[in-house]
Structures are given as structure tokens and as C-alpha cells.
Length: 339
Image: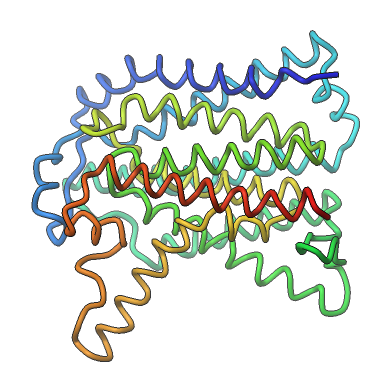
């Protein structure tokens, strides 16, 4: 039987997030929660100073509303998600994924709040943020362990036991995997509509993977995330009327990482999140090379700023990066379909 739930979740996530913009954005303006632009960023970004930030609240609201209504819809229609609630492990995994998104988003919210109150583009210290992110990541992994996560998927190999022998190395790797990808998504948020558009495509890839492998809760969560990103793009596309802030970018980071674990295939995020990796590695490469040679490889990092300095429009950057994400998503889907 065809399952309409993902389409319902996408639609609700989109509409709810878009409508929330009519209320949240004026509220943020009233509180004067405007973005302070980095002094070392592109000079033409100075015109964006004062644009309301912390708009990630809109996406969180959209996803939450979509989840609640989707669960109700599934039970009313006796859908596949309602039946999956009998599988405590799968249910716990998608709920934990949403919990990871909430936890990371909460850290971002505190970071944004400090920036806004102090009226400067600084928030939590690097040490404070790292500790909080690792704590949330460790809590999430403990939840997965106790909810029955015993294997992880490797393309063309299959499921590998992670509770004994060499498989135990999975846990420390997973901890820094979550931490790294969350911050990589955060770095991707620097051009109008970029992080939300790339994550929309990433969520669509997870929708396909979750649907194909019958992870109905994860499918619904990915659909809600895709819809919320789409609704947010309506406000965040160039010229942006609101920024997601760390509240949104870190929540999205937690969401995509959580989705990869919820379907038991975190390794596939390397392909789906290829843009996030490129953004993060561009920064690390630039810093390492500059320390060694006092020269720069890129005109500015993260790499989306390099393309801005090469006179790419923000719209072109968003389009190209989204296409690259689409290709990465297709490469992630391929081994699952073939194996």
C-alpha cells in the first residue's frame, strides 16, 4: 500500500514554517535580534547587518508541528508509521534523532542569544561550545546503545557488529563524527539560502533511503525536515529577510546526523553531506596552509566565500552546491539499492 505520510509531512512542515515566518520575523525585529556581521567577512555582507537572526526557531516549530500532525494522520489512516510504533528500537532511533537536533539547536540558541545580547559576533567560547556538543553527542549515542543499536552499515559489506572486537571503535568515531558534521553544517550557513537549500536536498535523500529500507519514522522526520527547510528558504533566499543563526544551523546539523543513524547507515552521510565536508575541510586546509607558509589557498573560507570573491552570485552558489548535494545523495542511494 502506497504511503502518503512523507508527502503529508513535507507539506505540513513547509506550510507551518512559512506561516511561522509572519509571526516570528516581526517578533525578532521587535526584540532587535539582528545579526552582527563578522568584521573579517566579505565587505558586501555589511549591508546584511541587523537582519533578524535566530530564525531557526521557525524550522524547529515547523518540524515539531509536522511530526505531531503526521503521527495523528498515520494513526487515523492506520499507516505504516502507526504500525512501526510496535518496534521500540526503530521508534527510539528516530525520536533520538529529533532529540539530537533539539539538543544541538539549544546550544546554538544559547550561542545566538549571547551574541544578540552583547551586540557582537561572539557567543559561547570554543571550549564551552565543544564541551556542550560532545555532551549532547555522547548522550545521544548512549540512548542509541540502550535502545538496541548493535550494528552499523558499510556499503557493499553489509551490517557490522559494533558491540565487540574491532567494532567497538565505532563509538569514539561516532562521537567525533556527530560533533564534526554538526559544526560543518554550521559553517555552511554563510550565504542566503545556502544551508537550508543544501539540507533540503539532503533530507530528500534520507527520505528516499528511509522509504526504501522501511524506516517509516525516519522517513517522516526527513520529510518534515525537508518541508521545514523549504518553508524557511521562502524567507531566507537572497535577499534574506531572516537568518537561521546557530539555532537553525546546529539544529539542522543534529538532524541530518540523527537521520543517518536512524536508518542505521551513518557512513552514507559522507556522500549526502559532501558539501558540509567540503566547507569544513576548506577551513582546516586554509588554516593549516597559512600557518605553514603564511599564504592562502582560497581567497576566503569557508569555501562559499571564496566563490563569492570570484564574483559568483549568492543564487549561483546555492544552486551549484545544491546540485553537488543531489549528486552525493544519488551516490549514497546507489549502494543501498544495489546491495
